[in-house]
Length: 135
Image 1 (cartoon, rainbow, N blue to C red):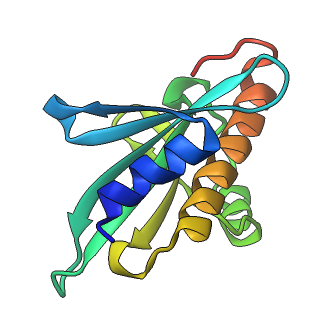
Image 2: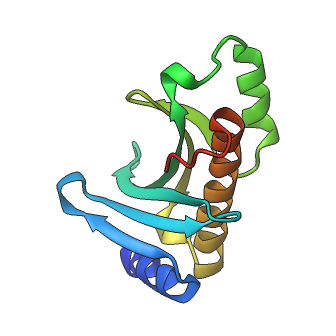
């Protein structure tokens, strides 16, 4: 099954809002997290050095100016402790990102990754911004 078809099926079956943003060539999924909070998860595609297609799945955690970057070792520890995704900088945003080979992914795996990225990102966002739901 083509990965983009899989994205549509998972979103439909899980009740997630799905939008394809053509000008950015990216999918945006919006998931309910806790309470009235929601989190956007984005998926785009790129190829590795061996020309294998990889889905890059990410969610914004904070604006770089609002994120504490004073302890790089703690950021590396977070990346080791966290199973799904790792912290990265994308333009001026701190994101939680996970890369997935598209030809190897099934429905359960994609749903699990998207859900885990959304909930973890929302939790980090809540620690930084409190009750304010920024995305």
